[in-house]
Image (cartoon, rainbow, N blue to C red; front, side, top):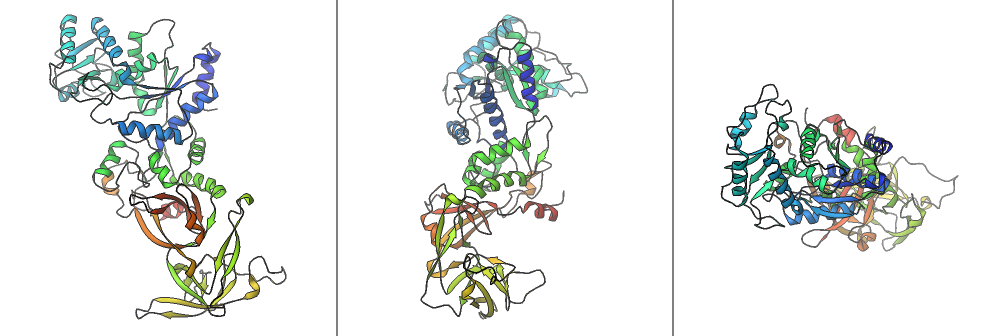
Length: 554
């Protein structure tokens, strides 16, 4: 039980009716959701399941400059992908008129005023937490004057940036959020839902708690950076609260920060504008859409959130933990295939030129229900270039002249000679095989022991495929520290033509495969409608080695 559950349980013990518990997930539709949102989504919807409480999906659409309908649709798709379904869909814009009426009420209580200072002057007069702020020259306007000016703001009389509506709280407060925060600003932009009906729009702080109150959200869960805004959240609720209504309680939890990545929407937008990535759903970034295209499963993402837990302490989670969870899941559900990414020709001199042998292989040793497949074996094969060294070294246990290895599911071979081109590059490896060494056919007393097993494909049966290999976008563990633009990795994607066994000829969009000894891959189509295989994660954890080398000094 995490600390938020303990708070809820304590509320129930004190008499809070369990049938009045209600949660919400309130994203702003100004970009795609990212890995950090998975934590918030998981938290709210799982609590909804536990307490059999409704969960609202409420879009915080208060800024028409950056919000788009496509972002709303992508958010819905991402939540459904994770396996959750909301009980009610709403928008902050549904409540614009009510928020406006409440703002008028605050003016009438002499707790809000129209300020004609510029944004820059307002910021300067707020000063710093170590000194008192300076009251606005317009703070003591009469109630009638403020009502008149606020109506003129609503009717479009003033231009953008010429005035705002501010709450009248305390310019001496040590909490900067309480120093007469802005409630409304003028934005003469069409809204995706309300069109040109409004030219004044409520700020997040004024909207958030009031929408929670309207929807009778019992526990308003948000990330830790909103902790110092809680006094303002409560102050606004104090002004409108009525007895016998549910008063929302704001509770903060730590953000999810992952190493070598950014989740800031603004910074992701920068990557798109600079054409470092083409879109919000690029597999190299950790938006939920990007993770889906990369091949991450909902189960692995939720398992990851379970493992890191819900806490109040901010820290950086190593990407290797996320990769471990997807690797763990795919190991159980992904069929095995053999693919060669850097081919070199291997010729078995003592194997018949015209013979093709169909070798039996397990599709997934972790699950017998996956059954078996037949793989063609012939005289001419491809193996990985890195699996051969002409002259054996001390720690190299793969194929070399005079050395024996096993070909996966097939025979033991021994390299005898090589053929090189005019540049001295090896273009053919000639070897011999032991006909009695076939996998599964040897008696225990006759079994040879070799130190290495190699994957391979038969050349005449090989299927050409395109695979995408991804690398971290940033070269620094925490790119949020300092100038993140300096740490952008210039080589984040490799597009490789590879060769596979004929099994992949039947691959369908959305399927997962383990390329043996290489990694786990996800099938998708690119913009040209060609099938590509996105690498999700390596077979083994490579992050520890990367971190030891340190991509970039901290």
